[in-house]
Every structure is written in structure tokens, then in C-alpha cells.
Image (cartoon, rainbow, N blue to C red; front, side, top):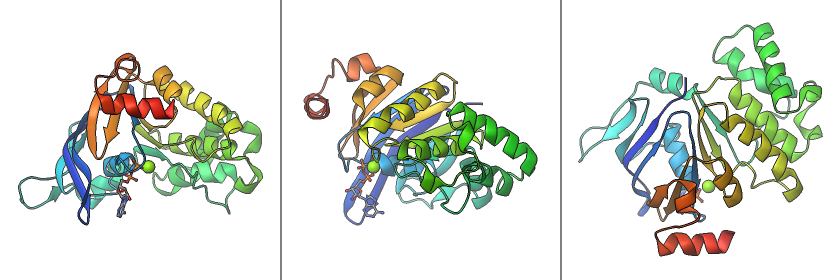
Length: 253
Ligand code: ADP
Ligand code: MG
């Protein structure tokens, strides 16, 4: 069910800026990989390439051995067909910093929209499953409410339930708590922590270092589009090998 992600020699530029400058990393299947690094280091771009929202200039990303796209030394860009990309993306959950719920749909409809429309699930089945997922994130009683009636923390928990409704084999989180008031961060982290035990592959971009230490199997420190170091949290976060990592951790902790 859960997928291993390989990123190899990934390069992506916007204009003359190399945002990803030769990234190599592996997010092992069923494990939690935390990505940390300063603002502008390429964390969001990395997640967007994994979800096919951006195309690499060179290098590749593979998910369970299936290449997303590759261009080597000026060769023609070879990539999956549009249909294969959509199929693969439909099994990747993406949770954004800004929850991105549909404001005109109820909470339950937000959760069942994609399964019904893109996966053609029967609405009754999708709703039954959607209610289970809302219960799992502690929002069983909000199924009929509209997003504007919910706090930021509740909206982000709905966004997580929505991602889970696609039964993803990989979930990408892009700073899921950084738009929240401090008192709402804990409830969202608790839900993500619960998911981490379920064995779905997760890649979590976060500024919450204590949280990364707690849930991550693997930590990747990115700076200026490069992986400075990666390894178990006890190494990268507590005994980093590189001065740049120490400096970053000294600033954010
Ligand atoms: P992070 O998530 O680590 O803060 P990003 O991946 O968002 O970093 O951005 C890395 C760099 O790429 C930044 O300098 C940002 O301004 C630039 N960038 C990101 N997306 C675009 C884009 N669509 N067009 C031009 N520049 C971009
Ligand atoms: Mg970002």
C-alpha cells in the first residue's frame, strides 16, 4: 500500500535561480520523512515535483519504481502519459499550509468530492467512509458545517481527512501548521502523529523541530536547493555533522 519515493539528481530552475540544485533523497515506504530548512531552500518545490505539479529540468523522481519524468543531458524529456500522471497523483495526498477547502461545500462534501468525482466511488460509500475519517480527526460532529464556521486547526484536520479519503499510498504535508495560531498547532500535530503510526509513507515539511524529532524516521536538511545532510533524527537534529545545520537549528529551536 505505501510507496517508496526516490529523488535523484533533481534540478529545477526558475529563470536563472536553481531552486533544486541536484537533490538526492529517499523516502522509505511506510516511514515518515521530515524535511527541514530555511525559507526559500526549495522545500515546497520539492514536494510539488513529487506530486507532478512541477516538472524537473533534469534528474528524476520515482514512486515505487515508476518514473514520473526524466531528462538526462539534453535528451528529450520522457515522462508518464497524462493519464498515468493523473492516476499516480490520485494516490498522493497533499496537505497545504493554507487548508484550501471548498468554501461552498459542507465539511463532508469537501471530504467526498474527490473520491466521487475522480475515483467514481458511489456517493453513499464515500460518505460512509468520509464520516469515519471525520471521526478519526475528531470532527464527527462537523460533517454538515461549512468551512467558515471552523477554526483553522479544525479546517486543517478536514484537509487531512480529505487527503485520506483518496486512500493515498503517500501523503505530502507542506508546513501544515504554519498558518495556525499557536494554540491550534497541537491538535493538528496530534492527528499527523496518529497517521504516522498507520504505515503510510509521509513526507512532512515542517518548522516544528520537536515534532520532527518525535515522529520522523528520517530527517532531511535542505539549504539553497541542496541536501546538506540526512539521517535519523538523533543524528541530524541532535548531533548534526554540518555547521550549516547547527546554525539553522540554533535559530529555529
Ligand atoms: P521553501 O518552500 O523552502 O520556502 P520554495 O520551494 O517555495 O522554498 O521556493 C524556493 C525558491 O524558488 C524561492 O526563492 C522562491 O522564490 C522560488 N520560487 C518558487 N516557486 C516559484 C515560481 N513558481 N516562480 C519563480 N520562482 C519561484
Ligand atoms: Mg514552502
